[in-house]
Amino acid sequence: MYDYCIVGGGIVGLATALTVSRNKPDARILVIERENALASHQTGHNSGVIHAGIYYAPKSFKAELCRAGESATKAFCDENGIVYRTPGKLVVATDQLEMMRLAALEVNAAANGISCRRLGAEELTEMEPAASGLGAILVPQSGIVDYAQVGRTMADRIRERGGEIMTGMSVERLEERADHVRVVTAETVFEARYAVACVGLQADRLASRSSMEVDFRIVPFRGEYYALRPELANLVERMIYPVPDPALPFLGIHLTPMIDGALTVGPNAVLGLSREGYPKFSVNARDIASYLRFPGFWKLIAANLSSGAGEMRDSLFKSAYLEKCRKYCPSLQLEDLQPYRAGIRAQAVSRSGALIHDFMFLRSKRALHVCNAPSPAATSALPIGRMIYERLHAAD
Picture (cartoon, rainbow, N blue to C red):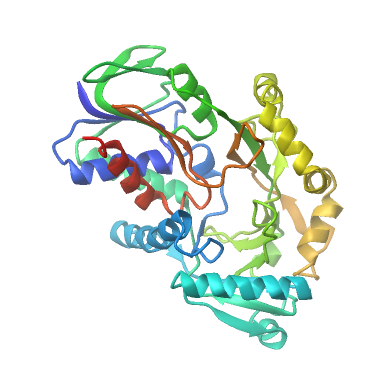
């Protein structure tokens, strides 16, 4: 009998297991991951940004978790010899409407206690000659890291504390009993006093198979990136972000120096045809049928038809993608954009058709399903792990 079983070896599941090991040093902990390697999905397919949290409403859950996560991620890296850099981020406004939105971001940042500085067009050009805009906000503490490495290091610390990690094992369902949970896999059954499911792209399916009442659907959104030609790896020193449109749920295409020295541009956000198909044009009929049968999907499409069509155009036509990039980096040419891996975001959608932006949990007496852990979940993984642990024991 284990004390805790964590299903899912991404960064949120690993951070949860690490939190348990720190709070319950004598507990028997088991982490089960379906893939043969940890951090194989969202953790290993993101832009690697350590966010500061300027986008989120003051005092909101996401703002507080992001602020805590930014410092906790850097501290964990310092403690464990993980390389990260803090080049800072420039959020660049290219028209008057964006300048107004930039002012709103400054208010957010001040309310959230985040240091930032407004730049005019001239200072922006001096700081980043390849960037172009009417003005910008400099967020100096924004950083970059390899989150897959962070996850693997968390796994090392869990093992050092006596925890077990099993990969290549798929959990079919959780069966709750009076004093424990049966974790049913294709090969065997484990028993634990408590179970937590952090399975991201499969969250709705595992919850449903575990007899939870599921009134949402995971809809995959592909985030497609390009890498700039190696000769352009030093085109910018800092991350260059557009000003986000508050009507849209994603931050927009941005330039990001990666920890391995590459310079990427992306991602867009196009409806995915497969939850875990990373090559372009990957199709999974079961995944498509899952959201086509869900009434909330059609409401979502109806409400976002124009922006969805634009994202699809950017995906199909490289020139349209380039157009977005040149808005704030006009020197880029079509041949500068080279293939790079895609990511897939697990976006929870409600029956009403709303994109669920906040954290969502389904809870029974001894099991907790993390149904939605929105961006910036990687940055915030350690405080999210603490929050999950506290919620799991809230009724004790």
